[in-house]
Length: 116
Image (tube, rainbow, N blue to C red; front, side, top):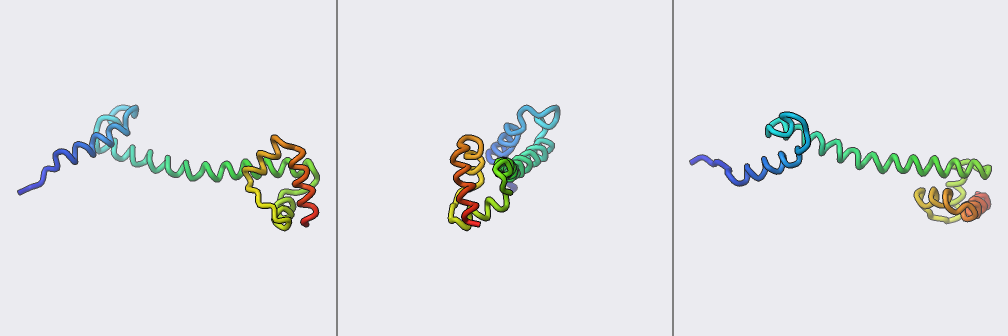
C-alpha cells in the first residue's frame, strides 16, 4: 500500500507558499520554485542577522575611537587602560557614553590613562 501523505504534504506546501507570498511570478505560485526561493531567503536572513551584530560592533568601535582621539588617546590604549583599571564596560555602553555623556567619558579616559 502506498503512502500519499495528504494532510502533511498540504500543510508543508502551504507553509512554503505562504512564506513566498509577495514574490513575483512562479516564485509565489509553484511549490518547487517557491521552495528554493524561500530557503534561500531564510538563509540570507539568518546570515544577515549574524552580520548585523558585527556591523554594530564596528560602528561602536568607530565611535569610541573618534571620541578617544578627540581626548588625545588612541582606541587601543583606551581599551587596554580600561582593562588594567578593572573597568568592565562593553563597547555598546562605551559608545553610548561617548555620544551622550561627555563628562563621564572624560573620567573613563582619565582612569584608563592611570591604568596604563
